[in-house]
Length: 158
Image (tube, rainbow, N blue to C red; front, side, top):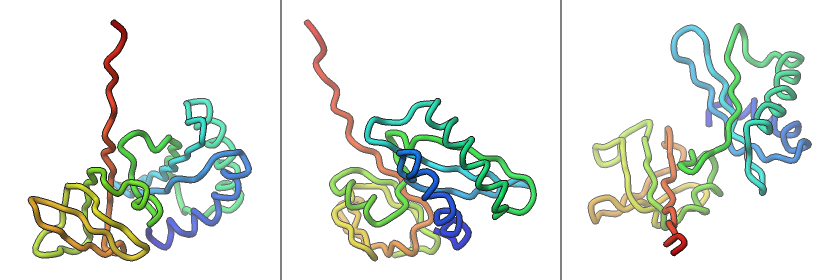
């Protein structure tokens, strides 16, 4: 998480939690001239479009007052979805045993991309298996990580 994303998390998390949601993560993406601030929210009962609209409205007010992003930007509020981005160490712990897709800022063993089962995780390191080889990857080096949980598909009614 960048310094700006950490600052935005500190600023917005209390408002989002006061509304009954959890802040899953924040992405500040700057393609071209107009950056995008993307917030991922979650709730025990799930998140729908109305929830995202309510959070967007409240967060917009906080951002207008505090003005942490200079210039124009786009605000997006979304649920984390099934293929969740992983932001914090506790996110990784919840997906041990699942397939994750990782992109690193700097290469480890000559590669920056890893996709395979997450074998273990702690506050500083994750271990992923790729092609029958285990890679220890420092969390501080992760640029982006996404979980691909197994979906159980029922037999349906007969």
